[in-house]
Image (cartoon, rainbow over all chains, first blue to last red; front, top):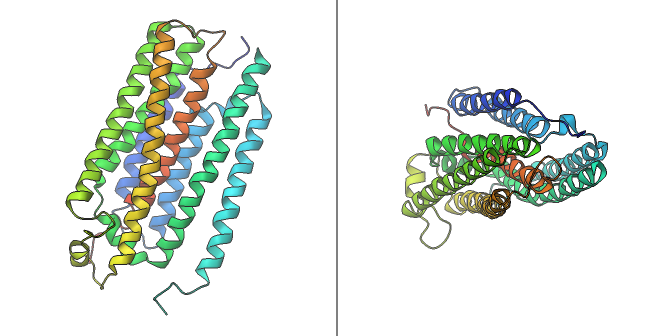
Length: 98
Length: 211
């Protein structure tokens, strides 16, 4: 069996980390950080998503390199959609506000 | 065998890439309207049930743990442990859907569902500046569309895991063959990740104390 088996200790560690980050994001949202609130919330969500992908979804140990190519390109296309759309809409007036 | 397993998991990842595209469209619409109508989005977001939302996030994280452990149990050929973990995943998935149902019912009771019965008065009371009912309805439309599509994915996931539990009970999975456990597991984790983003984007837009 060449498949990589991850120790259950690693899984429990990641689980605890995810629960702590969930509590942290809910708490820190009630603290006034100005415009940083949104950035902190998205940063915490991204850390959580990354550890889920790397450990729970085994990407860190994947022998198939194409998997990583698929993930990176999916994120790339998503950013293309979000960033190009937002650069357009943020430079317009919202309907009913001008 | 190794190559077959890699190909199956690669196919699942390609499917998940299309799912990312599917959800990205909704995230994009959300971001644009949140930027345009920030005040309405912030006030509406504050009316969502934060304790239930946080508990539901924790429930999904626990279900991701049981899924990760079930793949491990299948790899090691522990049938009873595998069935137990799959049933635990199913129960956690149903708890998530139940709590989501309670939250949706709250929205119906408060008349915060977009449509003719939409009532903006409670939102207006909590806003320091006048708010537009149409724009608040946009927030709730996106809330129901995004949490609704997520819940549909959860329901499909519960269906898949019911089938997995049946097969695992029959002893279909072991160290040599457990591709379905692994691939439906990937799907379950993906649905968890979508929620990891939905939670801060919908519930935590503006929870700062009002001055």
